Length: 482
Image 1: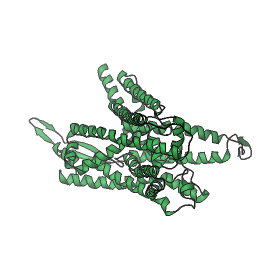
Image 2: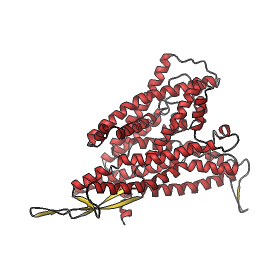
Image 3: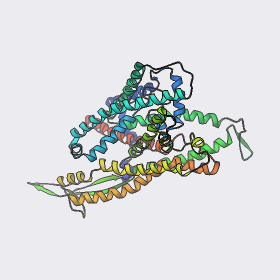
């Protein structure tokens, strides 16, 4: 019964849309998303955009970091738009600030200092985002221009210092605007803005994928699908069975993702009975829900960004010195094995190097799950708050023992949650490995386990936020009517 009541109240959500404030918030979010998609179509002012798009296409075949950037920028990299670097500087800045918060006691005290302390840390994160965006903008423009030159792509354009400055400024401004848009969405109280932009970026890639899939599906040049000799469908039989198989697999994965995202451990909290004058307080029970994957999708995003940076460094080195072995090694080792680079990087089939990237990826996802959970679920702070409120866990002494008990519970949940997140992140590699063994080449997934995880997790979190606000709005309406 608790599960049913705890899920979405869709009738309440639809009812809340009659409220002007709710409509205004939803309208603002949709307006920001439309503006975001328009920004993705504005090219970087650096010569002929089509020339650089060709260089981007070549670059994306070599670097997983490029594919990651293209994913979270909604195709901004592939279209060579001003949001080319996307939210990557902000994500990197968040990682750095959270690491510093754990390493520097003064920052840790500030983060525990309530809303004002967190606001200061967020402000420093924004300030750190700007130089990171400048550095990444310079690196990408430099790499792309060197790719154009080294590939002998026909161009008469030779950038001046002014062109370089204008391009870097526009790309930095695009990244800062995305950060600002994310914060505007967060202020509306309907989900996290940065996660929503990444969600919109992934979803925006689906029409292109579906169009390509539809073209292949209805290509009957090699014959049509014959069902049991009595019905012929105008579809490609091979593509049809592949699509059917992956559709079933995707539904199973989505179901598992929803279950993992919603799973939680319920701890019963008792409140001591207090007598004040002729009145008594407390003596009631409450619950403390602890999610199985409290960190959500953040560890996967952090791990991808963190692990992909060496490939970017390697590309910068090889752009300056094409024969440099260090740059070539960094680019090769830290590029995810995929359908686009398998033939060139592994001409003799699977080697030990193929497993390096997936192994490092799994380890980083596992480690970031523990790290980020420790940040957002501070057991000592929760135990202190419970003690101040006269609350306790049955059979556990308040204070330090409660913090120790909560720590054990969270660590057990983290173990399974981190393993589950790691396996989800491994889905593309596992699928490619199976296809390499059976067909000799990876198939490549247009939506990886990471993409599915982001889409499902953000969709559920946003629905939950909408549901909470809808309940609040309809309650106010009911109170006004009475």
